Length: 137
Image 1 (cartoon, rainbow, N blue to C red):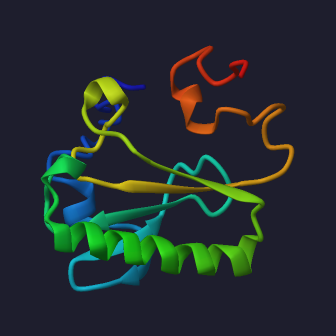
Image 2 (cartoon, rainbow, N blue to C red; image 1 turned 180 degrees about the vertical axis):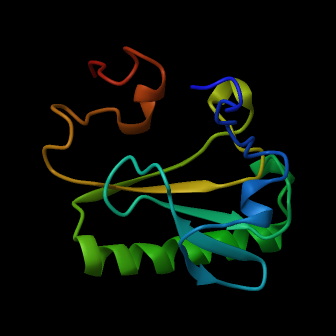
């Protein structure tokens, strides 16, 4: 790099909010919520559902916004079933930095799962905390 070149700046997705100003890959839209494919998908078809209103925590959503998001989750699932034919799904929301939230605009992950995508899927979302997914009954 020459003296005149500046190193590439990483864009802060929270300033301004990426989901408010530049949503990518929008697939479904409603009055209170919309959905889009995740730009860093955990699996083929990984989709985000989010309210239009900028709010950081899922627990701050209105009843109407939760309903709108849940309706879009169901619609997206039907689309993903047709296009990708997954064997299952994980649905998750990260609330707060300690839970892994990096964009502070509520977004619900709809992650298609496929037979064999992990060696042992037992415990599903419990794997967010290492060694807590596999347990004996």
